Amino acid sequence: MEHLLQRYPVLSRCREEIAAARELMLQTYRMGGKILLCGNGGSCADCDYIVGELMKGFLSRRKMEEHDRERFFSLCGEEGAFYADSLQYGIPALSLAGTAAVNSAFNNDVEPALVYAQGVWAMGQKNDLLIGLSTSGNSENVINALITAKAKGLKSLGLTGAGECAMDRWCDTVILVPEREAFKIQELHLPVYHYLCAAMEAELFV
Image (cartoon, rainbow, N blue to C red; front, top):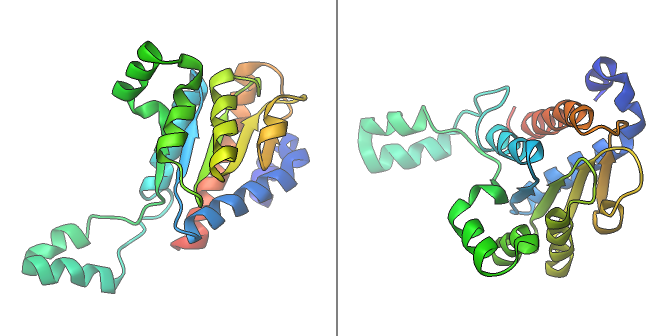
């Protein structure tokens, strides 16, 4: 955290919220839950990026422990090394924007404003966490997903910009980075979620 705030002093006002987000994410993993993410445009791309840092090694290789390595050797003999030396531990995460076929069907057949809500309703479980990214904090499909997460008993985290927004009502924790223009907000979301992914990895696997 101190390294993050040293490099981005403007985020100092978000210290408590970033720390709370870290604990939410760690709690989700430790309780056997997964992390669902949603956003639009650049924030949609951020969701995919975050999933990539969670599902495989980010700053470390997350090497397989011996008891897990033995599973592959018992199945495949010496060829088990191919799996044991290559596979890495991951933090279960899924971008709701990444299910293109069902999303396009739902948008066409039902209601576009509920496309992410449908993903939460179908896949969300009690110990899961929904992360919503919206530079305005008011994106309709993201807010609807957050409302649905509440209805299903999920925890939720919002990343947005400065100022009051609908996310404030529906998220357990909201990180409001101190910018108001979309591209500047996204520029500050990047170091925040890099920190969160790195902090989880250091806590769980290093």
